[in-house]
Length: 95
Image 1 (cartoon, one colour):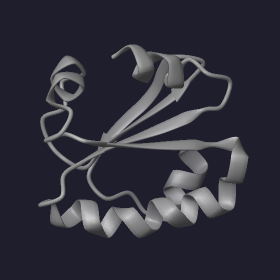
Image 2 (cartoon, helix red, strand yellow; image 1 turned 90 degrees about the vertical axis):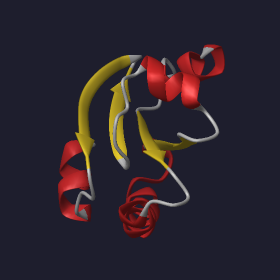
Image 3 (cartoon, rainbow, N blue to C red; image 1 turned 135 degrees about the vertical axis):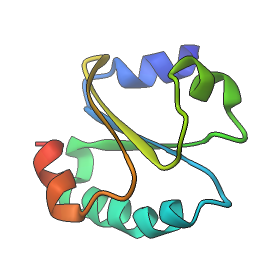
């Protein structure tokens, strides 16, 4: 959790994508996140966390379904949503 906390407390807002390799909606969301990164560039960090490889973080944050996105600014959680979120909504939510 130490490195995770260092990342989300950084100056760059961070969108954390909790996903799993077996998750169909996660595969749908992946290219949307790539497009979001292209639009936002260095203004947004996207951190992908596989819940099967990192169960402690997922459990500590109460992740019960994937995909779940959590947006952090200056170490504070701004919003949290589960499911596939369309690109226009993600652009607005991360502004």
